[in-house]
Image (cartoon, rainbow, N blue to C red; front, side, top):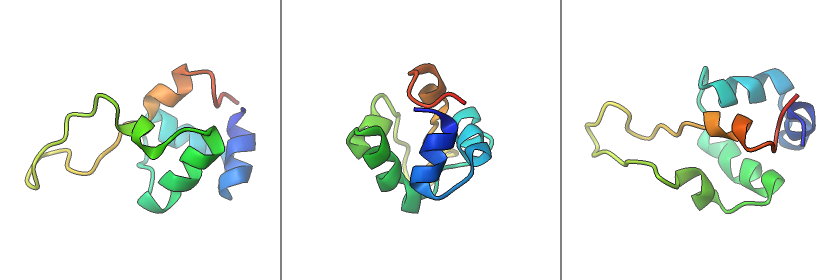
Length: 76
């Protein structure tokens, strides 16, 4: 699936998808379910190997999706 196709499914631009992949911007929680549906993976897929920190951690509630670019599922 290309970034453009994924963006169309999510109602956002392929540029935003690229920024999600590069870590330039964060994926809003409101898009996470739609992203999982579009890629046909459970939401838990994005949390594999994530080191969850406590409420006062530096990266609290941050999910790095840069790996998506390396899975071959959404290149432009």
